[in-house]
Image 1: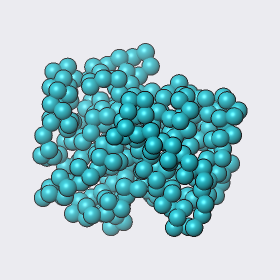
Image 2: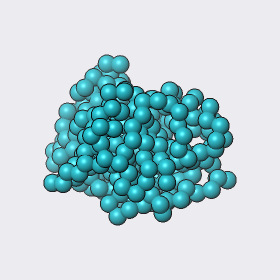
Image 3: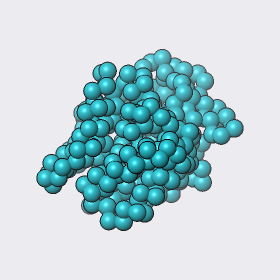
Image 4: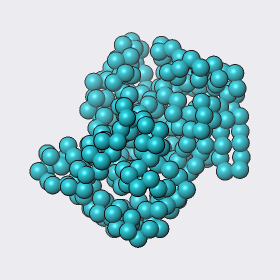
Amino acid sequence: MEIGIIGTGSVGMLCAAYLAKEHIVTVYTRRKEQSDLINEKGIILIHGDQKTTVKDVKARSGKDFKEPLLIIAVKQYQLGDVLPLLKKTKERKNLLFLQNGMSHIPMLESLEGHNVYIGSVEHGSLKTGDGTVEHTGAGVIKVSSLFPDQPPLSLAALDSVRFPFKAARDWKEAHSRKLLANAVINPLTALLKVKNGELTENPYYSRMAKSVFKEASGILGITDENAEWEKVMEICRRTAENRSSMLRDTEAGRKTEIDGIIGYLLDEAKKQKTRVPLLEFLYHAVKGGEKE
């Protein structure tokens, strides 16, 4: 299968490294320097003590997306640059979006000329260079259709033991649970400047996390709060040594995904006429530290 991957951050490069073993994969980069590096040396995939060089990846800095399946792995706030290009594509394509948060979902509804799928990524990944990605936590990518009348994405061809894909009936349910974990882990680790595991190991930080969880789960309508709280804590334990993407973004002076995560919850709270002072605090604290 021919697959195009738009976005070469950690998630895009992780997908490219695994999928290129069975498919013809082209990654689309913003910078020619990165595409030249990948074309020359491939992508280095690090998983535990193993280091693999994946040579069978093509890279382009152009914007003429030709592949029938496009995986869009840019950050939520970068979709404004990508969506107009996808709308101009005449051929009907399968578009798989892998963004954190949920505020971008209404934007995707304008792509009715294509088959649109929403993916929730449960892998841990870290980009350590233009051609290097580390697989820091094994997980799954859950995929569901955005439009109810479109055919489901064939996941059998994509699925593998080391990089599994799983069908999800309801994108909102799958994304809500991922959003809940992101809402707790990302902004707190960014503000406290700690690794994920500190939210379970430090009792004071754990109480902070539980309070944020309570507000976010109430907005999302989570019914079994005890089970979901344990899942969030299990993610923290499983990725104890990881530095969250929001922490890395704030340290590097980059724009964060706070709008797509906490911003979405604030919009929903406003619709529900519910006060969420902790979420408001987190939003303004992280937003105020953005450099872009």
